[in-house]
Length: 436
Ligand code: HEM
Image 1 (cartoon, rainbow, N blue to C red):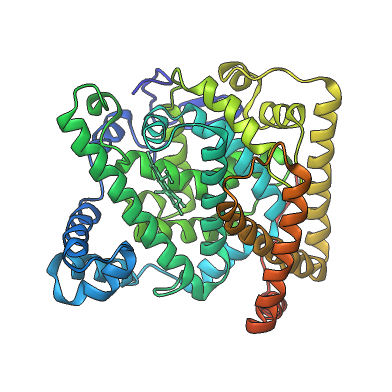
Image 2: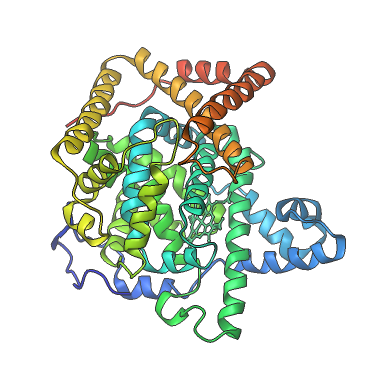
């Protein structure tokens, strides 16, 4: 690990890029994080091995189905099932429900933050994660686009509704699937690293998908929006919203097999995020990643954002130095103005929400609807993987709307899901967000 080269004292003020904070007892030192790089989800790996053996016997392909059908007759699988399906005593469903609502209250801002800070800012400078990702399919724009959409789809599944994240719900099952997918990637890579010299340097990068990297991912999903993303777009979440969102992602961390104690409060989560930010380091892949991320983001219909707009947004949200680091060009003033215009709109929407709960309910309902279309789009994109989105922009756009709306109508008809969401929004009192 390299990165920020200081060993801070308690009370020391640290300026990290655009983020300023004070080192506290909650912060995690570099040595502890280094130790966590050699730790991983052992139960997940053991369960994976048992599942693979069982699959050979019965010919089943899907890991989760094999788990569900066989856990009762196997000790390791049973331990894994019990762990993932036992709700810890610290879980407060009402708080997690509020955390989910927070995501939709700021859906547009969250998406911008997720893409420009989480994706462009964080992933490009996370050496160990990039080293794993490059060995599981490369950095081509098509692979990155699929990864982005799959991850966003999962994010929608865990935030969609409270029943979805409870044991047996859609988001809960999706999270267990991801845990098993991680275990399978880790298992394969560890085996290859042991047998093939130079395949993956575990001394340098730690175990693939280790505990430190996993904590970093949970921080990226649960902490960065609160302290690194929304504030840079002009939105300052309240402390209650920070606690609620943290509670949601602490629970996700628990289900996915990541140390979750560092996320047991907003203060600890923030400290964990900052500690990890201190040790991030770019690699020779950072520039390639930065370039390909932009190609991938500008390929997403229906927005099909321009390259200079994404470059301006990336530089505003992550800082000009970061832009230089990952080698993206400096766009003209117009692109900056366009991005600041977007920030102005997002900020304005937050202000109106503050004074009009009705508008907020409306926005949450529309966001859930949009999320649903996006989820459908992710499914669709998997189905049309052969289609070059950049060169067939028009086709993919109309295809997207035709297919998305058909799918949506079907769902509205069968589940009256949107109506349910609307009612849920109306019933929720919703906490307030301040704008600075
Ligand atoms: C603990 C928090 C994490 C969460 C919530 C998370 C989430 C996800 C999601 C949603 C997917 C897509 C699953 C799908 O295909 O449907 C995924 C896949 C994957 N993740 Fe993670 N992830 C986390 C941590 C990590 C870390 C730390 C690494 C690596 C260092 C990693 C590496 C991967 C890889 C290699 C894949 C498979 C990508 C592929 O499709 O080729 N993940 N993860």
